[in-house]
Length: 430
Ligand code: C2E
Ligand code: MG
Ligand code: MG
Image 1: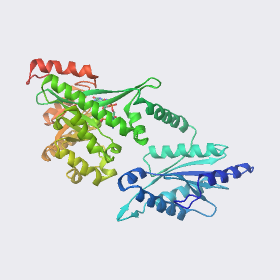
Image 2: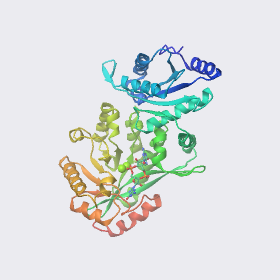
Image 3: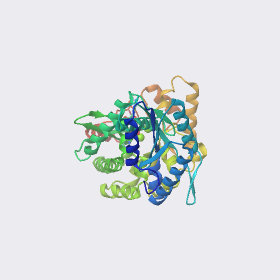
Image 4: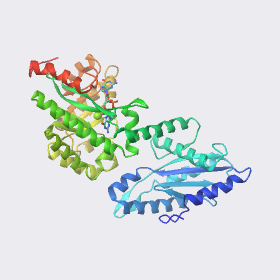
């Protein structure tokens, strides 16, 4: 028995599966149920609330079980339903549906009404495996897929999923040692002020060259680093490294170049996030208004109060906050006004569609006007050709970043980019 939930535990589950699989001719199914974003609730409200939530979630699950379904808790926020004598798949999928539906009602934890959802992976015996381990593992693999499909859904296992899952595990394994082995490097992509044509700062973008896996794109490893929480250490390193490098560039040129650093929600939720930011400024000697933290809208969706107050505090210290990938998330305009931000970074998809869609031209113009009305600086990301730049200039966009100006470059590339600006002094235009 599991003491927190009073449900059967892992050992009981494995025993039951084992003895069922010994009998010939049985058909069974396994639902692997994992709550979405439980760790955020644990992080923000504390372990006590986390425990209460687990207990309530167990009861919620139990309420939709039918006679004979075995609900167990594997540990953490993972639950497993073992269903014996399955006659047709539809009954299993229906149960998965009822589970999802039962989580649409909120949970009352202390004074807060919290919404949590679950992701479910399903495997069938004997089609998806003949042993307890295989059936469990494949349901787990399907559960991961459900998370990738946006959570709050269920997915039935299929053989093709295994490769992806193994790849993920493999990346995580190597990621664990990457930090100690100095396998990360930062590249820097310049941001140019459209009016003057001058570089005003850079965005730091992490690069991972693994001796085993080769070059791995941040698009594939950042998510894994977040799920495994390794991003806490990696992100801190990025912040310190980028601040120190930009300070050295500012000393060298005598100009206050800015550095933009991407920040993950997982970092922001840590209690010591504010201290780490202030400490990396102090340690590097970089001026606060030369540091810009890039966050995405999902940060506010996950935990509004907690994140807004931290960002407000940092902003009050002179640090800039940019809303990255703006336009791809859910921000309503009224909501935007409540956020402690100084910069809007318009996502590349709007810039890409400038050429062929009239409405996206007016959309971009509107974002720029709106941003300015709110006192924000507007930056266009992913600018690749001169027509886009001309349009953005006409629309009074403040800054551009993109391959047209430069790809992200290593440290020495930054020095090369800044050298001509130094020789020509302010006013030099490209
Ligand atoms: P992002 O913050 O939106 O960064 C912009 C991405 O667009 C970068 O990809 C950059 O190389 C790419 N890019 C810039 N200009 C152009 C262009 O003109 N055309 C095209 N096609 N692409 C352009 P990258 O470096 O692969 O990074 C991808 C994402 O990974 C970043 O998106 C960011 O969300 C994340 N990331 C990168 N470094 C870090 C980091 O240190 N910490 C965290 N938490 N996330 C990071
Ligand atoms: Mg960014
Ligand atoms: Mg972006």
